[in-house]
Image (spheres, each protein chain N blue to C red):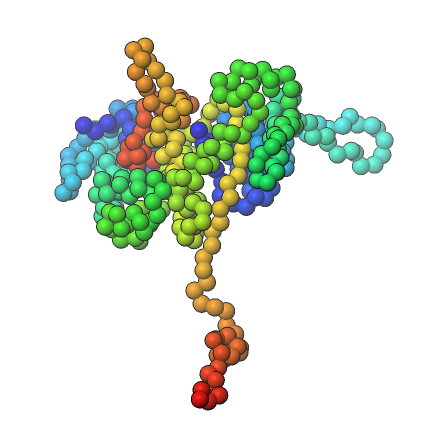
Length: 158
Length: 205
């Protein structure tokens, strides 16, 4: 059973745009192979998918796969490790992680506010971001003696 | 609960941005505790102070610059750990702003802290390192792009706040059964544990 109170009308011209739990959202029908709900706003008659404004929209992966990816990444698995565990492509996993990062950022922005605190602790965490340079810088002196393993010996081995 | 985070350098500019975001999210003026990084003090003074103009003297010349008056209810303390051979031998606690008696009362009323400390943030730092592969030390999984580090850290902080029950926050009901709570439940932001699937399916504008 779908909880309609979490959904809101995504139509910016509707007067109930962005308001949750007002009772203006109703189920219309289902579509697709996963039987996704098609919802309708009673105020402006706009129809929209239940996946609208979530990370499941326009994704080729199923809901379960996306949830497993995010849970695996949240429990200290690497991107390639997650891809190997779930037998997926690493670029696909990375795409989902970046998409979920944006979604989670909006959740943190919108839900964590107006806090009543008595204590607040501040600290830093050290880490680094680094990328290996794929190609070395251009050098004018291109010879085995200058940058390689040395020129071949001219001495007779005997 | 981890309220916010900022990925950047250990500079005053980045610290100011971070503190500005933190101040926007809280309604009260809590007791701030940190290590001895001086940027926190500067950034806090910037947000919890106002300028007071000097009275006019009636003389000619440039008037004096307005005085910066720090809010009397700003409470800030630092913790300095003195180490010997890598082990902490002594902890020095300094009250930078605020009345020591008020701070003592806050700490007495606190259910978790018995003194000025940064233990909880240090503990959550370790939890983050254990959950985030990009922060795990001495591995090859370090971040190669800032965007990826941001995304993964955001996911894990959301997971920590909303999905992961914290053992220290467990309550017992009238029948003695354990009620697991997440940090966001303890802060009254949500009323039940949100599984990760529910967070991802929560529509955001």
